[in-house]
Length: 269
Ligand SMILES: NC(=O)c1ccc[n+]([C@@H]2O[C@H](COP(=O)([O-])OP(=O)(O)OC[C@H]3O[C@@H](n4cnc5c(N)ncnc54)[C@H](OP(=O)(O)O)[C@@H]3O)[C@@H](O)[C@H]2O)c1
Image (cartoon, rainbow, N blue to C red):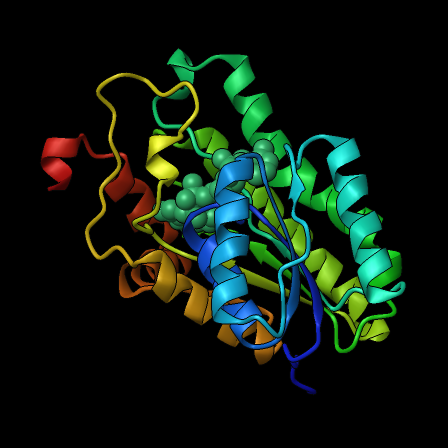
C-alpha cells in the first residue's frame, strides 16, 4: 500500500493547543505539511504558530481555527479553510481533540456523558462527514482517529469515556471498510496513559478519584508513533506495553479481565 507523504500535504489537526495534538503538529510542520490547527485556547495556538514560524519558516502554519470542535460552525470553518488552502483537496484529518471524566457512573451527571460523547464521538464523526468530499481528492488520504486502549477494554470509573472511545473504534472500523475502495485509509491510534494535561481538564470528576499513570508515555512519544502510523497508513495501532497487555489479555481471556477489574482497589494491587 502507498505511503502517506507529509511533504506538501494539507492537514487538519483538532486539539492542537497541547499534549499529543501539539506534538503532532510540530512534527508534521517539520516534515513539510501545511497544518490547519484547531483548539479553543487561542493564545496557545498563536504561540505554536510563532514557534513554528521560527523553526520552519518555509512552511508557515496557516491561521488556526479557534473554537470548540463540537460546534458545527467551527467544523465548517475548518473545512472551508482546508478547501481554500488545498484548492479542494485534504490529505490528512487528525481527530485528536478529546476530554475525559473520572468517577462512578452513579454519581455522575447526565451532562458529563453528553459532553464527552459530543467532543470525543459526534465532533470527529461530523467533521469527517464534512471533510469527506475534500479527502476524496486527497493524495493517499488518511483519517487518523485518536482512540484509547479504553476503547478496546473498558475499566471502572471511566464509563462515559470508555463508551465514547468504543464508539469511535467501532465507527472507525466500519468507515475503513467503506472508504478503502476510494483510497482513503482510516487509522485508529489507541494510546494508553499519556503525561499530558488531559487529567487536569477532566469533566465534572468525582472528588478523590484518580487515574493510575504507571508505564505512561510522553505526548512526544505518542506523536512519533502516531506520525509513523499515518505515514505507513496503518489500520490500527495500540501503544505502550501496559496498553497492549490490557487489550490483548482481554482478547485472550475476557472473563479473567472482568474479574480482575471488578476487584476492590486494595485487592487489585
Ligand atoms: N492523556 C491520556 O492519557 C490519553 C490516553 C489515551 C487516549 N488519549 C486521547 O488522546 C487525545 C489527545 O489527548 P491529550 O492527552 O493530548 O490531552 P490534552 O493534553 O488534554 O489535549 C487535548 C487537546 O484537545 C483540545 N480540546 C479539548 N476539548 C476541545 C474542544 N471541545 N474543541 C476543540 N479542542 C478541544 C485541547 O485544547 P483546548 O483546551 O485549547 O480546546 C487540547 O489541545 C484525546 O482524544 C484523548 O482522549 C489520551
